[in-house]
Length: 475
Ligand code: GLN
Image (cartoon, rainbow, N blue to C red; front, side):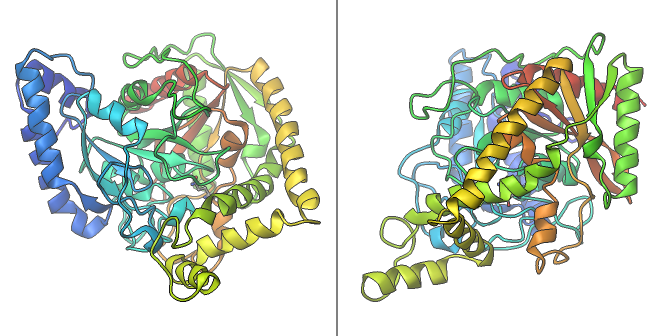
């Protein structure tokens, strides 16, 4: 079991009857017990519920359900996805005692497929950050080097998978929060096209940017989990009718595939070793039969400033409900004082910073100067990327300009933390799919190759990722 702790292998052995779902869950609980004291990936492990759910999967098996697509697979959830009756805190003290009154659609779909929800993982408060250090609860360490951050904001999910505690987890990605921790921890993580996966039951960050997606150790496992959670949901009007994903045996043929390499994805200040790994990855894709097309996306440098206008604007509006009245721990005093004390005590520094930035950006007089300009940049970028993606099938580059940094290193410098997102935010601004696939190490720490595709062409992104993974593993 130690050698092959993948979604596919677990699913096949449970369906084949060689192991029970209960024994898999007990093994996951044992691994978490053994490793999580050091890593701190989990905020809570649902041991009792997970064992009960595993027995139910075993009972379904006994009744003849022998082809459940995720039979007995333990999956962890980032702490911003709701499971009825369980706490969902979004990494915030504000919601430390909040219990969900309904279950997220992604969770219902995982459970129907036979997966076992094993617990909730640490994250930056309300998904603001890039290192998971903004969590109100504890720091999560990078399993590849415990003096380093795991990335963020889905750092708990990526670390739990990278440490081999669980085969897969869900994260959410508003500006890179699935891809960047996956890159820094050396696992595979995908942000699907905006609309592919329902956000019903996801605590909102930036509503025009948010998307849920899987983190696992192989591209195939990511594809399997994504094929279960995707699709139209009447509870989320932005979700669309699809069901077109190749769940496994993703074709890894690169013949005829055109891959764009924008020069703007190699910038001053980027770590040279990281850049070297990305150039080698591009060489590998070329040797594998892909056609490499050097290109320019002149508006790409505007993605980060536009993101840090749009995201706080949307997040500050979404966070208004956490006032101690509608949601969150109650404050003290008469109404205005009560709001002030609830938010003052319940929210951390980064959340307050985003609320202030967002409120400022949306204020009369500043709306036109900031928000409207950022929306115009978004529209112009869309035209530029659409035109580029007519000439190529996918665009590749780095996920992060640097490998994992030391715990505490950037916490006093928000702008340098924001700069970590320079290559990931475009996918959210444009709604396009993106994946991070491991492509080697820099200074002994993992580096991820980012593959971006056209909207709803998630299959193509998975195909190129699977091809790269196979070529890279063989080299
Ligand atoms: N790092 C970005 C932010 O802090 C994106 C985070 C995310 O994707 N949730 O907003």
